[in-house]
Image (cartoon, rainbow, N blue to C red):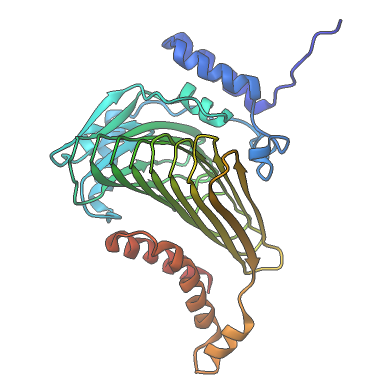
Length: 420
């Protein structure tokens, strides 16, 4: 009998070596178990359903060296950068430099919110890159919001990168809201260049009656950006999440939500602004595991040049999740005959008393609408920009926070201004 030989890619071989070196320095059975899950699957290809439109094994020629912990000089340089930059949102800011929480660069948190450093654990999800993140990430941090606390201003988590060298950076954070807590969070990714490979994970747990808002902003230029969110909602918990993508060569935001408590609610949305030869992939899975849950997913994309957009969404309604109400919609506008958008909304329903639906559309700008605006003296480029801002702004406006809406709309206008 011939032994089965697994042909590893160059990137996979490098990842195996990097993990072996990490284990030699700091052995961890938890990390070893996570890497074993990754090793079993390897880098995903089109044969993996959830990665059908993003063949990472083919796209990732090799894995860049893992970034070392920041030095005092790195921290000093980051402090100077922070003093010069304009913040995305008001409120306290936590800084992750090179994937590591740096307390001396971070603000004092409001009463009722604490941050602790240490391993960030989560129930494993069926994804090799989520497992790789757990295996290779440095010790993370957990942001906890006390029972019943109501935090008025958003808390920003700034993922700060720097330098022009090849490197991969891993980060792993947790956000935990205790019963009845209310808080908003903004994750901003900033400073990465084309030779950076970034792997980020955020683990969110919402206890009974907790309400959280989460906004992620990817506007820098990494060669690879893999962002994983794993969310668990207890009874009557509510999560509103939004992601804006306007940078990066290959970006993938993957979201795994499990609604384990009765009457939980989740609203997920996003806007992808893609040009050049970029590829932006949003893939999500929402599992209704308890009765009377409500989920809404609303995503839009504007795709230009030779760029490729991907939206894959799956709502799973388990047998116990009677009275589920779920709806998913994805819409895209293509600005170039070469632009592509791949959309795949899905429902898997095992309960018999539910209301669920999905839809997806791909179109170009309506020439009649452009003509109408031009007939009133508006230049063609301005007319197109107005229509596109209205299209993208509708997804942004679903966030119930005026300060965040304006900050996101400013990014949309800046992107359109660079195109029109």
